[in-house]
Length: 73
Image (cartoon, rainbow, N blue to C red):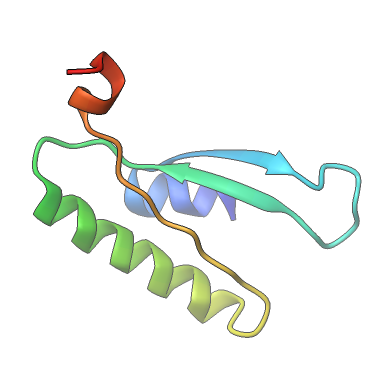
């Protein structure tokens, strides 16, 4: 799944929890861009793709961080 998300969406993907559990994983995907609109569409597409692969076993949490959040402006 990690490599598919990287190839299809250009996302940076890391396994961030459940490392030692068989058939369970928590993945964090990150998309970066200048404008929120295209990023939200890409996030929607990514979410739809993952749900199509694992329709009954996926949970999503989404958030947006801006440069102002990072710089504290």
